[in-house]
Amino acid sequence: MTSRAWALLILLAFLWGGSFLFVGVAVREWPPLAIVLARVGLAACALWTVVAALGLPVRGDAAALRAHLGMGVLNNAIPFTLIVWAQFSLPVGAAAILNATTPFWAVLLAHWAMAERATPARLTGIAIGFSGVVAMVGVDPLAAPWPAVSAMLSGTLSYALAGLWGRRFRALGIPPLLAASGQVTVASLLLLPLVALGPVPPWPSPGAAAALLALALLSTALAYQVYFRVLELAGPVNLLLVTLIIPAFAALMGWAVLGEALGWPHALGMGLIALGLAVMDGRVFSRFRRS
Image 1 (cartoon, helix red, strand yellow):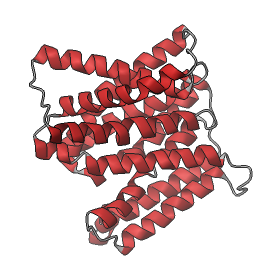
Image 2 (cartoon, rainbow, N blue to C red):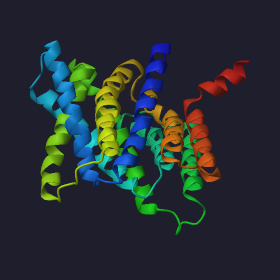
Image 3 (cartoon, rainbow, N blue to C red):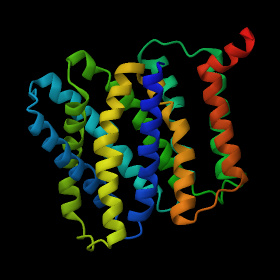
């Protein structure tokens, strides 16, 4: 990865780390589907305003529409809903740590769908990483919030699928701004009837309203432009390494704003996940061998 790709990856980690904080504030007042609809709906309005201001041509052919539909479902509607629901039971830092399992799914999917052989190093990294998940949720399986943990892991699987699906935007010549605009629009259209069938959420407090706006504009509209740029520069597997950096930002924000504390199981879990990613990547250990 180039220095530019790494800089964008860190920026993306900061923006997505903030999303866990903003959701942690919003779930105190709003139901999951309403939060997700506000996130993607406001982001869609902001992004299409920029598209119109720049006068970018919009493709409406079948291939482009399929690409947007797949990303809207896999990268927005499914994982956003699952992760927001999980955060009713999980603190900000713990949710972000579980989010770091995304690259492990990516390796397995690449082995199955892209004929990228899962090497011993990658399989070892997966085993170490999932041991980190076990360490984080605790040794007593009955005491762990397993429904929330399962929702988080399902959401990260959907993210990994989206990373593979999103490669087609570059092949189609669709720029990051239009790719981001299309996927959040699809997610909005899918979620709108579901939210309309449920109870009307209460008017948000100033704090919740600010969190929803930041979630939509910073952690979604801006973040997905950065996301597609990193995808172009570094590829889907390197892109998903962002989830290793997110927990540090999310835990710091949760501590500073919400007063959340992370215990030793969370530190151990994050450490094992980091070690698993390092084993999968291999570059750190290769440098040691050369020195």
